[in-house]
Length: 127
Image (cartoon, one colour):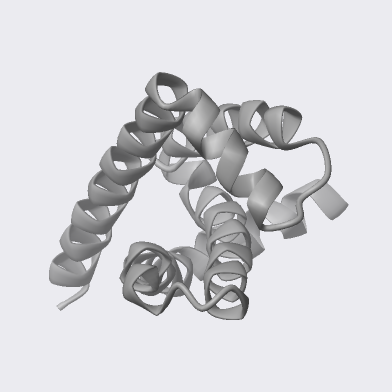
């Protein structure tokens, strides 16, 4: 059973990496449109927010493929996707809620599976 759960976690991690690399690419290629959305939603400094998200997506998508970092990377992605979900909800973009919902579910699964590893790392860093 543990092997199956570990395999499912790896599938989720690879899929999350794919989603966020693809999202970063779309943000780069559609930079002006994405920045305009952040401006419309009321985010300050929309161009800088877009640059920041591109960097976070690339770093987190890379880190989620490293076993020791996977849980922490999933936590970062989860936090950003919760903010995205709330932003879309507040601005009435109900049709787009599936975009952050998928990564939220996948990130929660990776965090649950990798929680023991995360706690071990935290414990080792404390000592």
